[in-house]
Length: 114
Length: 114
Image (tube, rainbow over all chains, first blue to last red; front, side, top):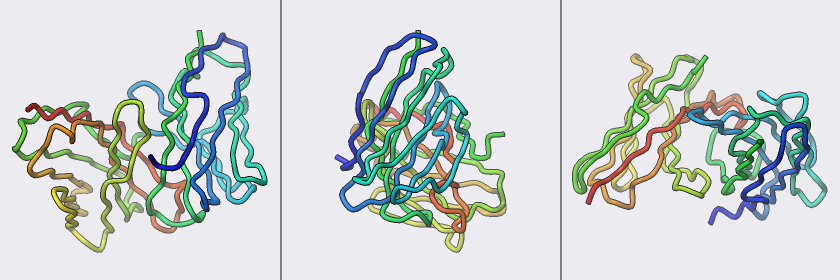
């Protein structure tokens, strides 16, 4: 158990819809990272928050947005969903926002867009 | 552009033998390398890392070798155990870049046959 909690674990929805994925980081971790893993792809970095502030953006579509709340949990909002958005979405947390050490991953949220 | 490549999608090894998982990278700015292990329905978990100032790092049955001139690293598992069956992700980062700069490979699925 990494200590990172993601909900929901599975989500099936239709094209054009909007969903929200939730992540609670490990106790004491201030950074939250979101990654997308599509079929046969590596983990693609989407966005990072540190202590409530956006720190870095990766390959995140404009239809996607995220935020980190005062209690440090984070939500990833995916809107106007397309078939290609079907993927595993992982949240990871870390104590700080800098460095190349270990990230702690949640179990992921599997999104299926029909 | 896949900067971190794991060219073998899968590998099967007999229990007790050596497992060798390979990873190639193209970005010469990468100087910190990690391996993550992922079981089904779980998030990736950190396994072992190596800095570019070293060419080898051991942790129990796991050893990572780095060949900077060839831009190649490998993970050796000796002896392999059935519990090692998982997907292994290679990841690389420039240490000055922060966690958001970590680039993951597409993973190699290892099956250890009893």
